[in-house]
Image (cartoon, rainbow, N blue to C red; front, side, top):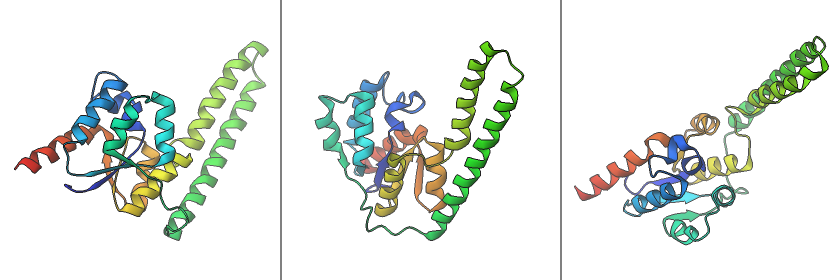
Length: 197
């Protein structure tokens, strides 16, 4: 893995299940990652859309320069990447399945609403939103940022680093190398050890 290209998702820096391995809060975790990654003989990439999303969430401010020294900001070449048609076929099938699942959730909640007092309908609507979102979005590529991370990893034949289950699932379908974000710090530390050996 020395010399490998790692393609980074925002989950590494925004989800406490993953960023706490690098520091006690989001800012110290980002600095901890930068310090460790700068010692590893590897390449780190993040698509522009993902970097912009990260900046909106964390407000990188003065850390942008330090981050960009270690992580190359680069979008995939969307117009020239060829992906297997089977991937598109499976994606369309998955979306169709999820739309139907979402409709069943909505129908169930509508039936339930007819049995409720007016004041209980608000709680039912909240439940509908949550279950509908889960039915349609969980476990799937559901944003342009997800698509960019996936495409860049595919284009560079890099290692996708993410905690997003949908992104990991679809990366696996096209043969992209994966690292669970929970293991990222240990892997980087292992690489620094190998470099010294």
